[in-house]
Length: 159
Image 1 (spheres, one colour):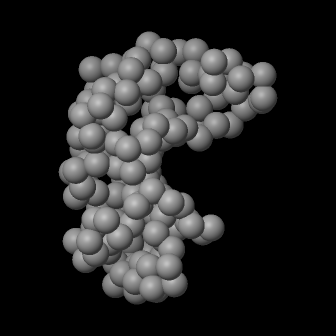
Image 2 (cartoon, rainbow, N blue to C red):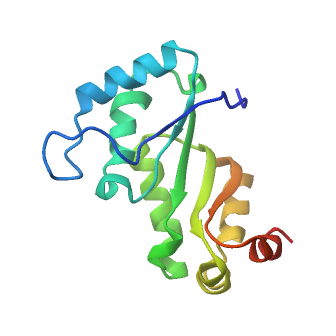
């Protein structure tokens, strides 16, 4: 299943039981996930940093443990803006797979690219090379990125 429906479920702002961002209301989230799937939608979008890192664990509990892997598309994002050194890249990626409880991501994004992050962190840490390798290994199905800058620099990244 590779087709993206018209609506995706973003995990950036889930209901919480307290003011602590990591204190996600899992029971309510499970109900939301089930309703989303019942309505025919399949795309779930999380990130290493959402809810202080707890959204990836929450998606494992609300979706991955409860629904067949081929019934949904799971997306996560590498935290380029945290500017990790290259020797941390593989560790972060493996941590994300573990936290989500999956063997692969359907889409894996470099999160929040702009001209500065691309010119420094993406190139210095060889992030696209890592992503190509993970794709070859079957750990991600599609390489992507989110972008926050102008069209000129987007064209440079794409070429």
